[in-house]
Image 1 (tube, helix red, strand yellow):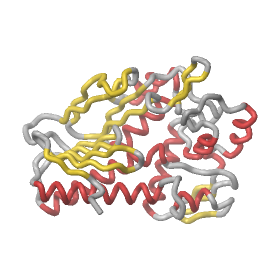
Image 2 (image 1 turned 90 degrees about the horizontal axis):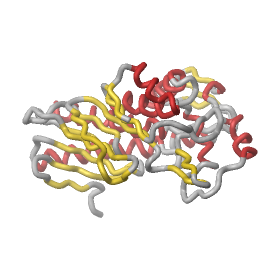
Image 3 (image 1 turned 90 degrees about the vertical axis):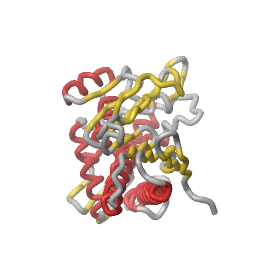
Length: 299
């Protein structure tokens, strides 16, 4: 059996690539040799895969399946999951209930896969009573979901994986006394640890949501997280109107009148992703929200 990842030498860095969480994931390593690059990319892949297996809502036997099939029973969570649930709870409160990990049930009606018709109001209204994080009982480490409610950590999982892999690489480099810059890119959710050896930042191309495959701008990233959220990849057109995959958990319908894409820079990838997603959920008030956060962003 071949390796789960590819490793190639580019002009001035090593590039490791693999697919996890339905995304192309890249590890760029600035100043290492081939053996070190192989070791570091293998570590990154193993950690990313561990997080996918543990938190995917499409798998049986993991903690998400236990919660979603608990039927009103209380589930005790491990320390790592407690941190993620606390983060989800923070996102819910910061967004006034718009960022809601219990909204995944709407995916039964809004799947955005060759969908040509809108769900009926009757079907949407039937799901809404099972959505709403305010209904759960959360006293760490004990979580009780009302019967019929499900959670999905997809809104924060990839950004969390980026930061976890970055921390793992930093610790391993410290142990091995490797002095190198790196960049972790999981499908556009990104973290860089420092400037490259020549003193310049990584150059990150931000895709144009109106012309997929082409870049809209280049962002210099020395250290920190960068995340984008938008409707360029997942949407449907019905009767000449585009419907975004960003769903309002309070109405059950896609958010309207927002920007096509939001990119945010923050201290780490989780913070950047949280701000980008909450901004999109604000619809026409997305930029007002970002200005209030005093963060760097691009629309």
